[in-house]
Image 1 (cartoon, each protein chain N blue to C red):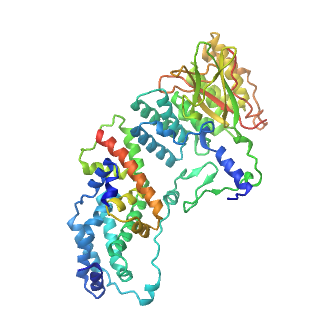
Image 2 (image 1 turned 120 degrees about the vertical axis):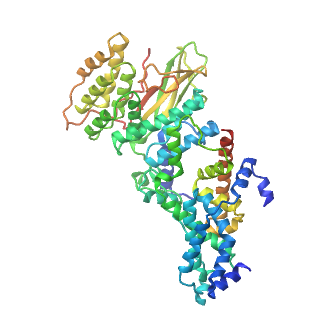
Image 3 (image 1 turned 180 degrees about the vertical axis):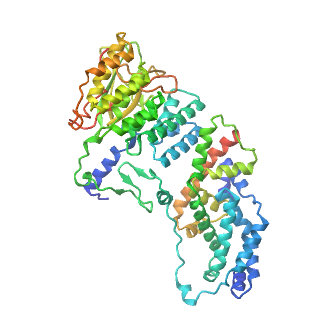
Length: 178
Length: 198
Length: 219
């Protein structure tokens, strides 16, 4: 069953066909949302909003677009929306500042498990850098797809990915040494 | 794709490998999602006409604008300039300078002479917040009378500085007000450069 | 590419308005001198400072100073954090409409034990004068041994009575001379403070920006 065929079925009245689409994409989208937003609650909100919106606007999906690209455009926007609604105190830099100011001895609260460390190091990136990095290296999108999705030019995206990689390299090495 | 990947630093490859691992998903979240979907009205095909409309570009206000909306100050503000709402080149604030090329007096930098009497030294340099505390940036010159002098252009305002003798000894300027303890075990000096000419 | 001349003058204006005195050097990435981990932490604090509307360059400068003075990383970080806190507390004491110089001078005073309340009092009593020179002199006097409360109340009273930057400068010179010749610092300040004429409020202050505490004396 191709995505486009399932979309047609939904539009013909078969809601279960949408469940199949969700099955196909939920985990991938969840991974992006969690890596992007840094916590599961926000990620679940983003996923909910994404799929509901996708369902509502299924009529606007055009077969010539890749369904995943179309779906990701909604997902990326939902993640940005939720991130911007978070209160200022949750911005990662304020969190970092609190850590720095209150724990000068740097007694690490990290368990050392890699997933947590990766999540932490991703959270330290500027959101736009993180988004570009995830779309490129985790979602395996081409720069052209990313450009169509975000509305940002290819060279700007390449720059963001590069800056993300530079920052990650520094932070990852530092964290692993702790 | 794998070519690109191998060109990346190994640390970054590590991060990517970890980031690509699946995350645990909450089964009840999925269920709630489908319930919400079923509660929605059935989606309809868009009328044929809509298919000729170009897909809408999704735009997002740059973070600077969001930050401004959240009541923050200081983001994207450089002295005298603000960043445009869409992140493009700085716009010019209306100012006298736009009409005449003259700068307001209060920002005209001034040449300030720093002198240290240290006839035994073999080299003396000036360091401070105006040269990033770079010990190589502002060497002083030995004068005939054994003192060391250098002239630096500083903008009006408060500057913290010190002399460095022979590359390693930090010495406050005995003729200047003392700055608060530097925290590093040395003493600094303060200079306040005047603004208006008279 | 033709650029209108007014735009060139604005470019020149921008170049000279580069914040916090970075006129003398052309270093493109001063933070490159910091070790990577320290750099990141300093940048985090600088980002926070930016968000709070605090000046960021004093933090960068503090870090670079530590590198120049070969301090250990932990010490440098501790000092940058201290600077951050002092600036934040100074902002609370002085309010939002102060210049960067007043803020850094006030932060210095706070680190010497001047209280936020004392700073706030000075801020309240100022009209169109700036606090930088009085605060710089205040910090110097305390560093030289004048008791904090004596220094603070004396400087404040002089400021309130309309003393100008000129006056504070000659006050500083006189006190310094006296301390060097053996006078008790607190007493030296009180003596010299009496010499400063009171200028009635409303009378234009004598040249508030004239003095140049940069003039070095031959010793």
